[in-house]
Length: 177
Image 1: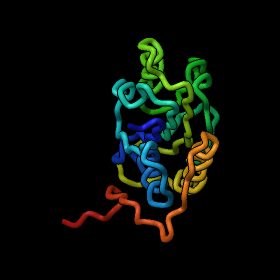
Image 2: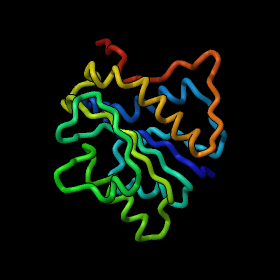
Image 3: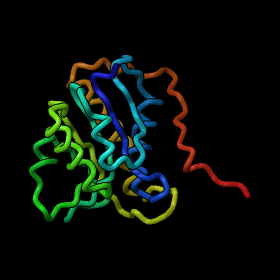
């Protein structure tokens, strides 16, 4: 049973929205974590995200963000209060209201993790296509490192894989007719 989960959310068919799944797969290829830490490509769960967070000690969500005034590729980290207390002007994620509402739903059910972190990268484009924009692609190493740092801060031993595995980013592979 997982006590901590890292979940990447996003639609891999919509440009920079693939950030979350890309980061968790890159992280999993580069690092090993104990069995009680789940690394999940969550796709686009919406309110189903509540099921992923129930009864955890900590949840780390990786997602593309829409942020007024934010530059594409800019990395942001928000805690649970920052997610729940945001003003109505800021849209954190293309999946809103899913993340915020899922946390509120879990709080109402008294199953929310005490620690929630959102590692977000400001999206440049959420248009149909299987490619990250250059600024978001350039932010991938920093986002992977932030996942490692968040887990380390939670006391999780994160071990580099030597050699690293190959991340399965199937959506970026050329399609042959």
